[in-house]
Image (cartoon, rainbow, N blue to C red):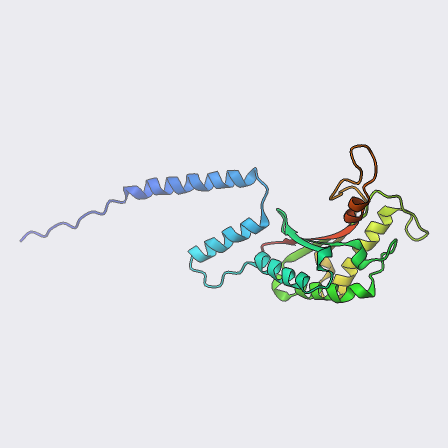
Length: 218
């Protein structure tokens, strides 16, 4: 009896499939190269890929930190002076200057320490040790001068540095901290109306401290 030859498996489709995957990869690389990376979206994509490849433990540190910081802020008595959001780089934590500093001062008020300690406890958690913290001091365009701070440049820088020093004292390594004073060069709201008149409420809102919290995705 003649032996029946084995059926040959047709694998021609693999060549077409490989070409399609390569083209898709090139397309996404091209799209990524001409766009800004959104840290939060990148985290979601990364988590989705990990799930697709069967990785059991999928962490989303940006999402986790946002939830924890939101809980921290809600527990603070003057929570309305804090705001939490995000940008393409990561998380943005902001608070009014008067909750942390007296007028014309860069010394942290004792009354602000409980709130700042609670927030710092979250930021210095080991699960967030891949995050960088950029602290910005902002003032309005209202002229200011004192023997210690000749202008708003020095005052805004000193306030950013004070928050950076505080975070370092709570356990965040200084290599993960940056401090910069921005005076009035990045106002959140217009300091003047269309007729050139100052807007006091906007000036007050512009005097703030902003902490940019950026993941490194190591």
